[in-house]
Length: 420
Image 1 (spheres, rainbow, N blue to C red):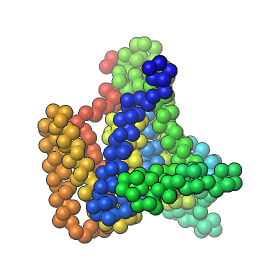
Image 2 (cartoon, rainbow, N blue to C red):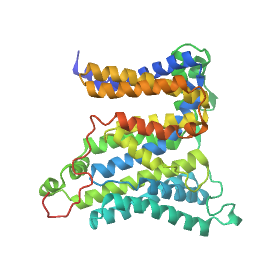
Image 3 (spheres, rainbow, N blue to C red):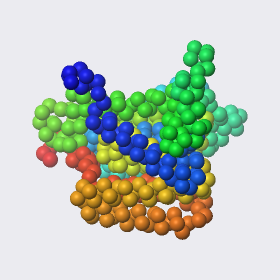
Image 4 (cartoon, rainbow, N blue to C red):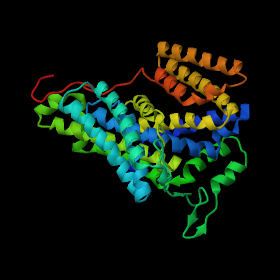
């Protein structure tokens, strides 16, 4: 086989990702066939999962840039809050794309505050992040009190309605328009056939290719862009060296303090973009506390993804999927328990084959508990439905900690000229 043909073939990592995705859809298809919970693989669930995953993804990528530079960013939630407020105000005043720009700027401002505290004054990163979360919530409430008056149609806790982002359907795949001509909906036709696995996969693909906003495309494109910037450029190498061993990086001429500032500023901007997404795509207005802990879940996605962009995307999609099921009813949430149980059994078997008996035992015990809960819990309480995304976050973090490696100097206090 020629070298050109070899380069055109998908990489081993890409092939493995496709195999994992198909395996996940197969598990869901089996659960749907057994339980009749069709919403697990419907277009509506997949579409909602993608929308709910994007803010988590932006928070996770924000945490990635900060922590790769050696700064722990617990303040992602506060930076997202700033992004929601400034995104709504910008869209209200000037239009949705101005809302995006101002949302990013609002998050970056609080990122700058965090950078000044942690990088320049060596304040403990956790303390500074908690302070950012408190400060952002209070500051946005004050701005609302002087901006969103009753005369504008808003109040101290919410803005007037704003212009949302436009959406589109992909031509031929999800029935989108092509130069004014409505194309066929191939995935919709396959989903309606009710074929095992094929219709389930079509429903999932149709959900992520139909009614998609332009901001969603931009957010997803930031994942490969982050990979390129961090692992294919000299700038990215310098940034990562600051999170691994800043004192060695300093000895090689890397401006460590400046690179840390860059990392935290980008972190705040990405979190602000996630906040703007909540307003411009999900809600159509600013509402106080609408981030609902997504900044913290983004940190969970970052840890689950082992501080890698693709891993953060996978974690965000998983948490977004769990969050979307809150709106699908008790039957679907109960079917999710069966899905998790089956997945844990498969993971335990894989760990055992990899000669990791302790991890296999832990995951097998968790699988037994989840499957027992599915068998005994004939009616799912409303409180459990509401807590679904948070329980999934805790469960994933509990089983994904065996092979994680954070940046070596993440959270370390660095002073220029000192030795590590």
